[in-house]
Image (tube, rainbow, N blue to C red):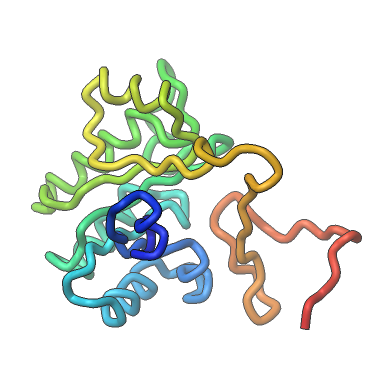
Amino acid sequence: MTTDEQASWWGGTGLGTVPHALIASYGGDTVAAAKHFADWAPADMNLTVIVDFENDSARTALDVAHALGPRLWGVRLDTSESLVDRSLWDEQGDFKPTGVNPQLVWKVREALDGAGFGAVRIVVSGGFTVDKIREFEESGVPVDAYGVGSSLIRGSNDFTGDIVLTDGRPSAKFGRGLRPNPRLELVT
């Protein structure tokens, strides 16, 4: 859960997740957003930074780990099921490369461990169901926490909203963008 208020529904506490919207508001700079969030957040909050904004999760995870050091609790992988993370572009062939997959998690874990950030946890989200979690667990994929929001809430309330423009300039995460819709009205 992102906040203590949300986590109270399940009897837990918030992890302090840096969301895509905050990264978008910093022009797509995950490190800048993470540093500002860390400056704002209470010292005892477990900070988790989403690292898929530029679709290069292993590189971004390392950049964030170097910037935040021991303040970083975890990184969150949330690659869309319609994308292949850049860190896997040279390794495709015998596995389903899209979304958050075991190879992506291992790639990020190995990068963090190799740079001395073995204590940084890996949180995964985006399309996780009971069955997908079971597959990851049975395969020993090094995941510390699973985000399962959409698999808990299905129906008319299951949607995502992205910031795609900031001050009139494109600011969407990789793979997203402005899609005009004549049914929408500008709210001022």
